Image (cartoon, rainbow, N blue to C red; front, side):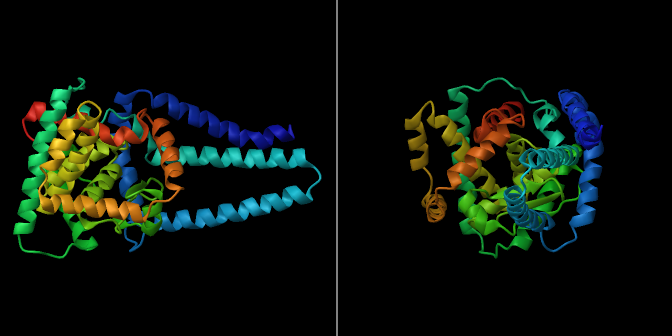
Length: 359
């Protein structure tokens, strides 16, 4: 009876987790009742609690948790070494660990994670889910090549201006406000975008931004080259708005960036999308990829060189392991392509172009 009482909270939490998992299988329900129903209120509440802070509360929380985990591992090791009753130690530790993991799972899903199961932006815009062809890829890549070169020319022909984190945050808010005029379902959202406290670490682990579902903050690694940051800001804000899948966050981020009145946002988005389509096209026609790359204007090539050199300076043996673990996380959250899920924005972009005749 004593053992049952110890396991009872875990059993209750497990049943709740099973119910959430079962409900999540119905994408229409999730879209109607969670993603566009209660989630905006959850997001607004988290931003009300943590958004006013001038620093990332989520990053600070992660740092404290990391220190606490190291402390607990040391304490558990000492307890194990000094305790003769190993089976009792394993039993108690197992109960605590299982409960902790269940609580994290429930909080993650209730606060944001269920959005992985929503119908999503393709459904909201009634975009076709037909498979695209190599011809489609060449077509969209050619258009993006033109957009990249044109937006970059517009940038260096304009008067230079300071690209600060504050201005990028304001520009992102303005971009989504303009986007909401066209798409009402993106209106009435409060945004919280903050520089990551762990940006320097992100350079070595391979992340440029992330969303914290426990505090509702969108974090951006502001140490990466500036021309990348506007699109990263838009991508992470899309996560904050409830678009959990990476291809959808990429696409909503793109829609916001091109809705902006700032050419830097246009260039940042078009350049990133061009690189995605280049990677996809390389699988079927590497010669066309090389031809398109050769047609980039020198100023764009200089930006790409800066990005490559930045990555080289931070290359390390840990990064591939982290990327592999992250890929597994994506696979377990309705994205079977893993880290390549980011590239799948290409399909959404092609479907959008075929329906609206523009990108």
